[in-house]
Structure formats: structure tokens, C-alpha cells
Image (cartoon, rainbow, N blue to C red; front, side, top):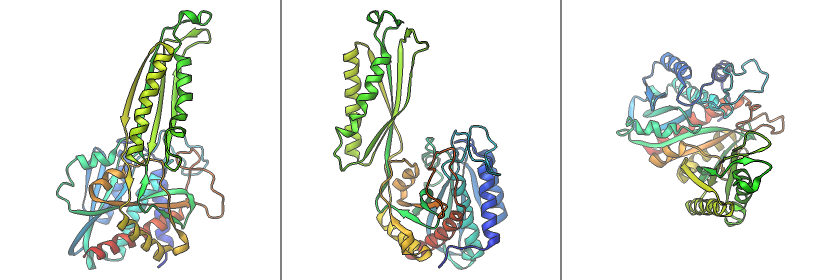
Amino acid sequence: MSYSVSDSFHQWLVQLRRQFHQFPELGYQEKETGARICEVLQSFTIPFQSGVGKTGIVARLKAAHEGPLVAFRADMDALPLNEANDVPYKSESPGIMHACGHDAHITIALGVIRQLLEDAWPRNGSGEILFLFQPAEEGGAGAKAMLDSGIFDKEPVQAIFAGHVHPDLPAGHVGISPGIANAATDTFAVRLKGKGGHGAYPHQCKDPLVAGASLVTQLQTLVSRNIPPLDSAVLTIGQFHAGTASNIIPEEAFVEGTLRSLRPEVRDLLLRRLGEMVKGVEASFDLSASLETMEGYPLLTNTPELARHMKSCATEVLGADHVHDQNPSLGSEDFSYFCDRWGGVMVNLGCHNPQEEFEYGLHSPHFDIDEAVLDVGTCLFSHGLIQYIEKLK
């Protein structure tokens, strides 16, 4: 089997993806994106429901014969980022960009529907597939919002599948983690409150800026000196705000960051030690320090059986030398909520030009894809979904 589609089909995929790319929208604001998806679904004359989990859409493709129910997820939202690419389909929404490939994910899902319709699967096959066009993956937990809507409570979903563009691999290659795929995340915020005053009289003050700088430095040892070297975890400070002028010692400093881990025990240890370090800075600098932690997405674990199934299907479609076992990523994914409910698998779809070296990763203002990945995703998941339904019969 090959992953090639007809020239007209490929051009349809490209045009669709570029439309989504040109008009990106943030989480829970995907109104125009959703409207375009609904237009395409209407042209396919298949039933769908909009407004699921605020702005999500669920389409149903049902075969003539009864059979198992599986699902496919495509996230829709973009990132708050100015695009730096000079391309005809550059984002026309200031400060918003599809820098994580969700425009490709939507397109692949619609491509799978079209492929199955053209193959006459609904007329000749058995079973059904739910296509979940999900809002707000980028921090808004749109997957959880869709599940919390209750519309799936009576749906006997046997498994859920998803793809994610992966610029580390060239187009035509895929990577699949046999188990743990993406990290659990926590966000933390520390507010340090001291005593401000004149920069010439620091002895009259309690400097939260110096305390914050010390804390940021100490936190760099949280992973390197607390976590076993063969475990993986990441701590990143994303914000540090303090002060208004060169000669004023500020009253407050604010530090915010993210923790990412691959094992619950490591996660618990990191959070405990984080709290102890904050208390230590409070005592050392004689000021007040408050810590707030916000639980993020849970660990994403591919169901081993589904990972093996997709590896086998990818080998058939792409060839064994284009299919790779993937190490876990410390990026997070709210696809984990669906996997926790039903069991699932996420396949990483290589998307950089095979003739060029990897240069720009996800969330870069320069990120773009080799649009051959649209053909790969469409063919791979069309094959994988139907083969899994056949396996369950």
C-alpha cells in the first residue's frame, strides 16, 4: 500500500490546510475554523454536532453494517504568536499562528473522511467512527471540556486515534511511542513580597528581586540534584517580573514556570521539593513567599496494543524503514484525557522537507510543514482505523 493520493485530492488537502493556516484562532474562539469544518462536513452529507465543549465539533461516519465504534481526534486551536514566515498563506490574524500544526490535524481528519467516502466504506463496511474536532488543546483542556459535555457518556468507544505533526522527522516517516508518550505537567507561580525602598539604602529594605534571582538559580538544581539520572523531568522558568526603575528596590517579585515529568513518583517529589525551596528562600531573605501550583495535563500513555497496531499499519503504508519507535516527549498533550477514558494512540507524523535539515520546531514563529504529511496522515489513518475496526469484529 502507498501513501500517495491523486493530484486533485492532494491539492484539495493543501488548499484546505492553507485556509485554516491563514485564519488561525485561539482556544475556545475557533468560530470561523469551526464554520469551515462544518461546511466541509455538510458537503460530505454526514451528520455532525457543533458546540461540544464550547466550540468543538463531533462528526459521525457510520457504515451500513453494525460494528465497533472508534474515534479520531483533531485539535483546532492556534498559538498566541506572530508568524515570521513569508508565504502566501501567512497568518492574517495578528499575534496568532498555527505554530503547532493543528491546521494540518484538522485537514488530515477531513481527508480521512473524504478517503473513506471515496472508498465506499460506509456502503460496504461495518462499524462507525467519531471524528472529534477539539478546541483549546494549547492550555485550555479542550479534550476534558468535550468529555465533560456528556455527549459521549453513552457512546461505546473502543479506542481513539490521533496524529501530531513532528518536525524532528522528515515527511514520509512516523514515530510511535510504545507506552508513555507525553509528560504530565504542572505550572507554578511564586510571589515574593518584601519591603521596597531606595536603591542607595538596601539595608532598610527586604529585596524580593535578589530573593527571586536566588530562587531561580536554586530551582535549576531541582531536577539535576533530586531526580535519578535515568529518569526524565524538566523545570523551566518562563516569567520573572520585578521592579520599575534602576534606583528603586521593589516591593514584590513574581516567578512563574512549568514542571514536566514522566512518572507520578517523580512528579510528587518535584512538587514537594519545590515547596521546600520556596520556604527556604522565604527564611533566608526574611520576606514572605507564596507558592501556587496548578495541575496541568496528565501523563499521555499510548495503549500498547494500539501502538503495535498503528506500527503495523504504518509499516504496510510507509515501509518498515520509515517507522520508528519514539522516546517519550516532555511536551504535554490533552489527548491524554481521551486516552484515560477509552485507551488510545498518538502517532507522530514527520513533517519537515526530506531534502532539508531540520531547522524550526513546534511553537516557533518560523514553523511550517512539508505538505506531503497531509497525504501521509490521510492514508495512514484511513487504513489504520478500518483495520482496527476489522480486528475488533
